[in-house]
Amino acid sequence: MQRSRLVAAALLLVVGFACCTEAKTPIFIIPGIGTSNLVGRKTDARFISQCPLLSGGSLIPGLPQTPVSVWTPGAMLAAPACWRYMMQLKFDQASGRFSDQDGISVTAVTGGTSGMDPITYPLFTAAGYNSLALHIETSLGYTRGVDLIAVPYDFRQDLTAMNATGELQRIADVISSGVEKNAGAKAVLIGHSMGGLVATALLSAPEFAEWRSEYIKGFLALAAPFGGAVPAVSARISGQLLGMPWLTQQLLGLSVDEAVYGSTWGQPSVVMLLPYSSALPSSMVLVSTPSRSYTVAQLQELLADIGDQAAADMFPQVHSLERLLAAPLAVPTACVYGRRVATPLRWRFSENLKPKQRARPGRREASGMGDGVVNIQSLQLCRNLISGPASAWVSELADASVDHVSVVSGAAGHKAVSAMLAKLL
View 1: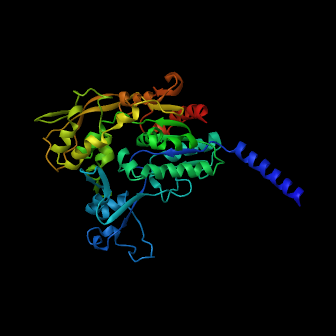
View 2: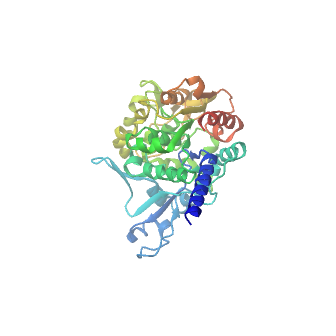
View 3: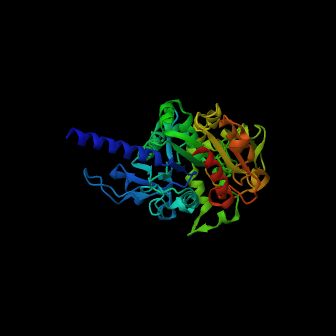
């Protein structure tokens, strides 16, 4: 009997060793703003009449509610006022805390086992991330739901809110679980756009230092706007996200500009993404109207002038990306982004801005180099996170076809990602 037990124990050790030596480094993809699906649930039956989208389900103890998809064209069309109510967060200036509006709870959908399920996470595919996932699967032999996992998040929140509400901890828990299921092999994070900022927050916040040491092997930032992005300004003023003509067309009868404008009202993440003096001069004009202009240093004043007082109040707290750049990260870090696409730097509006009234789309008055969304100076701030030589860990893609989206979905972006992953894995 004793001998049998010894043999069994030896076999377990051999099997366990084989498992651990064969396990791949798990990869977690953290996507950009607006590409995680959000669902809403009612917390107060009295709210049903105010927001008919949430009329399904039950508040009876023991009976589950049916969540309602929030971040979809259908929700925008069915009840625009209700939809905007669900998208906006309340800000208590005295406490500096954010919360959902009265009577509702909004959370990010996990997206199935892999985080990429096309039914519960359709925006992941629509934004091109499935193309990146397929490339990693075919070129590196990864498997979705096993060692390749996406991590959706509540993109309405800025980084300070995500930390205070436990959203960063929830993301960390998803990563921890994936690492443990892969025999403890430490993870590599890929963060695109705002997802790169979220990953950096996890890798730089002191309260996550022990977690980082135990679970993270490396980090790849794709087109992360460490110095903000000028299109965030036009989105807040008029809903004009990128200045592209097709974005002003109707989507199933709903103006896309109107939808963007409504969803960005008082939204902390949009305020966080407004340009910084670390990327553009403080005196540089971003917005001009017949009566006045607004510089990088006057963004808080701009928010107040358009009637978004909540955004103006939260500005000093949430407009704080410089904190991410205080020191290099403690894990190997790489940066990939495009640099040859004309990127908006200043908008001119034909009419003066009015409080709580969406402005007509402006025209791009000045452009510079970048990836079409984020200017090159903002992208290059990623270098501050790198402790090694930039020549080895930064890939500035001079291909004019590489923009903010195709760095994730295009062949040139995939090639650069593969080269950096070869160093990180």
